[in-house]
Amino acid sequence: MSVKSFYQAKFNAAIDTVQSEGRYRIFRDIRRSKGSFPTATWFKDDGSQSDITVWCSNDYLGMGQNACVVEAVKSAVDAAGTGSGGTRNISGTTRYHVQLEHELADLHGKTSALVMTSGYVANEATLGVMSKILPGLIIFSDEMNHASMISGIQRAQKIGVCEKRIFRHNDLADLEAKLKAAAPDAPKLIAFESVYSMDADIAPIKEICDLADKYNALTYLDEVHAVGMYGPRGGGIAEARGLMDRIDIIQGTLAKAYGMIGGYIAAETAIIDAVRSLASGFIFTTSIPPSTAAGALRSVRVLKITPEKRKKHQERANALKARFRSEGYDFIDGDTHIVPLMVCDPVKCQAISDRLINDYGIYAQPINYPTVPRGTERLRFTPSPDHTDAMMDSLMNALHDLRTEFSLPQQKWAAGKVA
Image (tube, rainbow, N blue to C red; front, side):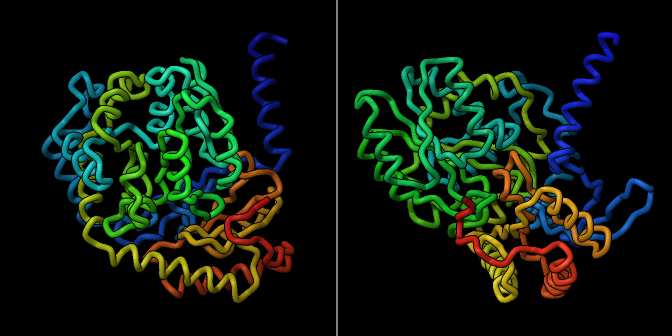
């Protein structure tokens, strides 16, 4: 066997393992239809096309289709061209970036904000540099934190003196026990999310802040699934609960409720300046295009003054949950806009997804390990303000047809509990 053949065999074996476990990921080739969200065109492998309804988009409010946002992007391209032309330090800071950061700082009641290329990068770069800023740091991380937060904490451990202590999901007693066991004079940071996107539950933010105060810890809150969605102006769960001033670093995304791409952190100026000056994930990356910053800026401004869109969104999410509840489907009946339908088998989950899109024109992507624990595979539905009753009726009819064939489980999952 040649050297190249040896390597090729290893790659093939890795894919074979994923496929044998029923968690091979299929990328659906779709094109969204501007002005008619949540419909799209699906381009099939055989070259044919069909119309579908998207039920799994993270463009939660359809702002990627909003006429004002589209116009802002087009206008910025006409005014400034396409790419930014460099890192933020080398010609990549445009007027659009500066305005967007001012708007985000205002959204979260902070003095400064810093825009990065994605939510993943914002978490990884910010958490990753904390041990350089705070030598001897102990990071207390919720066990259900996103992969980007985990990666950032791992980076912090590599580049500086840093310990990681994982506490049980939303378990205040376990968190306090770990804080209490830590050296009193050690710098501490509690990293957690507001909305956990796979389990549809919400962190006890106030109580975590109380513990942070008690044990002299910083707080780092990932609000990516909540910004734009909750609070009077879309500042997230912390705003909705009047707690933004108690969070030291708020991390968010422009890629979900705001319908664009990019991530950011908001905090007091000294924190932002330190991250800006030391985080390699920010320093050495070309900035988002001016048009993207302009679109995000418009989207943030629009959602600050349109609470009715958030209200409509919650009504639609509750409407779908009510349908699932009345039919006894096994779903996580949480307090958020995310509606996970439990299947609990990776092969079955993919098969149901395939049948839904092929036979009914309904796109719901399966969620498998490692995104969720093995045995908790699910179809994650994210109804938007634009999902009509007729669309919900079509979905329920399709699931009714498939329920017996795939032996979909009866309801058993409590809100936010999957294990």
